[in-house]
Length: 364
Image (cartoon, rainbow, N blue to C red; front, side, top):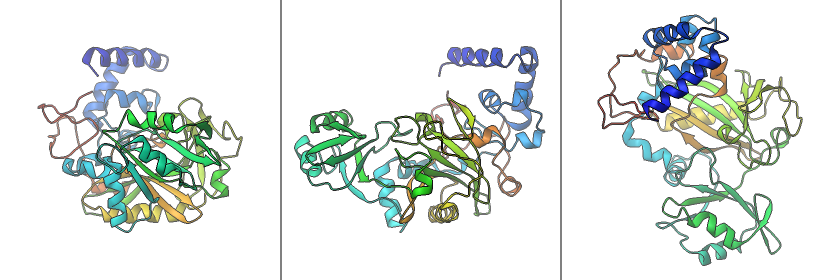
């Protein structure tokens, strides 16, 4: 994002927030938040600090991808990025560590097993269950499709399709490639929220300076509308869950807060969610297995066979609970090094938008 574009966006945020605080006071507040708790101007608006009566200490517990007082991303070594951003490598890593994850069926791409339409057609002619096509280095659920067979008809996302259409979908991205894995399903309690896709838990774990891993936040992601993925960025919804595994509140970008699923009308609040404790145990076990990292956002499915890791995200971003309360607990805060606006940045470590070619590493 260029400086001009960033300033334009910031000005729009200021105008929208003017009903709560005058623009001159917002400018003063932006500077104060950056100096005192290292909050980026965009996160200041994202977290609603312009209308918040929270104390400085409470606000300091929010984690912004653009910078914050406590910043677990800085404990992720840049050299290990490929292990968790390449889904093929990550899948092999999870299997090698003995962690449960959906079975890898095959790969598509220039440097992978299936390279031609004929090879793909031969593979699909033998499938007996639904198959998930997932870009090897994709994000936000983009280009994910689910392929199944009904007699002699191929289905893509539950609609009749053809081998030509499927090949066209993957052939435009053969250099990056796709992994194909067996589709997972939820048990009845989780499925009834939204049965058209796999609803997964997002578990954020943070390692403190003493090497101990902590649970920072857990939500349940759900699909909405015609989506076959549950990603928030793709229009999905999230349920925030308390420490006892009970659902507290639900939201989506489009609808804000709600108590019942917008499509199924399933009640979402005050429910003890199935698989909660098993999912947490798996997330902490996986985090410890890769103790050379500093934070993960694990996507974990609870299935009739138990908890399975779908993927681990290094750049998990701010989730909805951050809009209500920070996820850095007292214990986590004591174990992380506080940062300020003048903190030196070690360019061997990474955060979502680091640019190692610049003296000031952040880029928009």
